[in-house]
Figure (tube, rainbow, N blue to C red):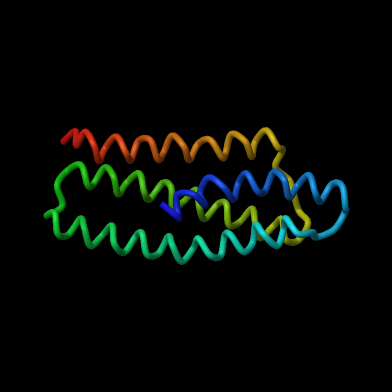
Length: 124
């Protein structure tokens, strides 16, 4: 859940960091907070992926686990993309609009809902 929280929080923090950059014209406290949050959550993501694969192995790889893992791969790609945004923001490059970042942030919510659905309903 810690990794999931950061998947939601870091894009939102980028919105506020962009506003701060526009106001100050330099690297401020929100930038530092966003970078620290992303780095910390990367470790949580690794732990989540390892334990998830371990659990899938123990369950015998039923079909619904394959769906869940595919969705997690998509969330991982989202997280890596977020990391690229953080790296660019650290250099003062904010090319994405606030609207894009808001939509980008909400995409991950649908991913998590789909994962929860797959785990609870076990459609296959």
